[in-house]
Length: 231
Image (cartoon, rainbow, N blue to C red):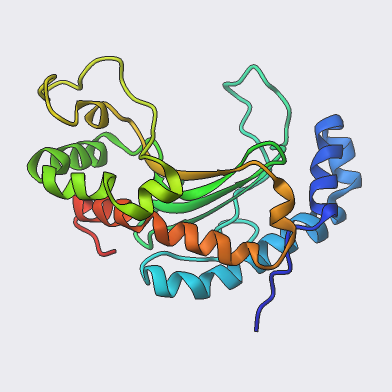
């Protein structure tokens, strides 16, 4: 049985209004809307995607919980930010590896913001040990890395592997290495940008997201191999 019917107009309307009223008083008054218009469709998406993930990789978890599950909290940590708005103006969902403990673990991700919808897979700002393991695997198995970046699904769906990088080669790595630009990366991800948020309003957006997650599998498998964990 499928539950997800799309991220409907009321989903996007809530975030439009939140952008103009990002304060605790407004959110408290509209908390029931948040639960019905935001949390519920996200839970439906997570439940249905959980079934699709079994065919992509059985080691990635879909946890349909508003707190402590696959959906990111709407509350911002503004302690170290100039922007003191208490709430995020987007919804985020991550299906992370079963051994992952936080958002820095390898996972499939979707960002839902009207003018910034993207989804795919990868690893964001991993710890230094994990980052070193990925870099070392690129060095030790360059042909396997080449197979990832030249994979047809990766190229056709995402264009290329992306991720912010260092300005200079990381210490201990050859600055002339064939894949030095990849070795300089601090994150590794394959993300598809969707210019029209309205495509998310239909139930078949789940199929599109699952297809895109599957296309990111070569990168995800490489990261898992670098960590010595199952994909």
